Image (cartoon, rainbow, N blue to C red; front, side, top):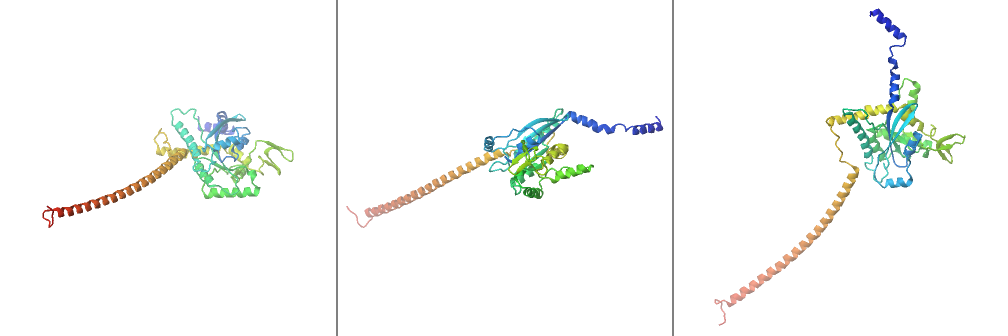
Length: 394
């Protein structure tokens, strides 16, 4: 083929729409639609902050069964943080999502909440570890991916600021996963108090260098950029959760909560940030959450482990366990008390022995003096009865 023919063919292809590279997005769309995706969402927060209600409201179905008050109080007596995984498959317009919702009942429900976030951190790292081990296998077909792509941290609306527990837990979790702060039960605060509370929370997050998820803002589409800026400006998201439909004064039936003063609507941007958070998690930034987990958090864990371990070597188990540490502290306390008790008994025995020794020494000294006195008397008698004496009896 001559150069003239090649140029003519290229021109013809250009005129007819190119060689077909532009169809690659369509091919990828078909592959992704057929394959679907995995998405793991973790919810962390104290009991009573509405985690279960929010998840069921978000997905418009009962993924997590709400606990009754008696069961919740019984759980609080266990003094342990559990990790419960709820799985579901969602389908919309021929696209499937395998959803994993990770619940953490028992978090922050005790008088002593020291290191109560460790089970959460361990779970996140264990999922990275399991994925890493599967990647190192000769056959990698059918890899199970349970890596957490987003963690919603529910903040109790106390009207003040973050508690020390929240600061330490968010620091530990945010360093390992996409952390999204959420103010629970926003309808318990007035609009002015809610704005002030949001500002205080963000001030603490900035001052404590807590790492939270920052979605991309800039886009070629101006409307998309404005929407992304609107979502970012709403952090921390103030939400209202409700699976019940109520009737508004104007006759509409909406999901929300009925109050004497009116209705707090779940999907009303004037009442809460539920729609913005739902858009962030599902409609606009789910892919970014997945890719950030893959390229940032998991890659950081993988790099750290590959630097300190040989290929295929299992991860060393942590000896630091809260439950075992509490038992160790209890045993150490009991041992210390027993040692103190034995020391007191020993001191009492020692004092008795010293007193007995002094008494025996005193008796011995008296006996010794008595012996000396007797010896002196014997010597005196002997000297009187001696033949060399001046006086003696026949």
